[in-house]
Image (cartoon, helix red, strand yellow):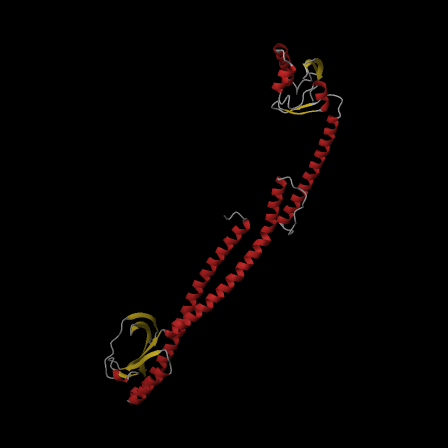
Length: 347
């Protein structure tokens, strides 16, 4: 699994893109939620402050009908407003969007304070009918004197709807960006790795001895230059192999038609080749003498003479690189029995 460099690169970059996109989504949603919350609170503050400004004149003039009109208009003009109430300094309800609560003493609900202005306006999040709402408290002032306050309760349905709508749009945006990015990554991965795959295939063919096809050069960058260098190296190897094959054929022709016997022996004493003249002179072929031990036993059946020949060969081989011992002539027993004198020359 994951043995292909293209697959590794694609999976790594896609995982990185997914992580980055997810992080972008989380940060964007948080910023968007905060922006929407601030806008809703700002609207509630504006409504509460406007009501407090108008209610001041109605309180001074004792216009209770005007106060009822203020809370009625404030409640009916905004669907997200749960209630609007006007209270005096002792928190007794003077006007309320629910007319049944007029005259009651308003108990302050517990909640977290979200915002507090210098003019006395306070925004809190409180519990209301098993739900959370925003309550905006604004003092009613007339010539610097406090006459009471306006409280506006705003439900969070608008906030939740706006946040849900924004999240949906952000999800679609992130998904679209991720899809385009994945397609681009796959395309870029193919462009980058196809030269590497071509080189890997060329190395496999070279290892198997297939040198006929030059590799395709896809680009002029480092990988392209490396591919060109590989093609030059392959051509050189192919030319050298052709030269070696040519010399091998020539050597084989010479050995097959040589007027003297020839034997090829490897470093382990294994006979690799005997030419036809050798077989003609002595009668032995490769099946008869597969190695040096068998050769000495058959060619020199007399143990004493065989020991002499082996010792001579051993001494010559020990000094082969430094001293030229010249040819050696020994009496060799042929395959069919008769003996003959053979001169051996090492090459």
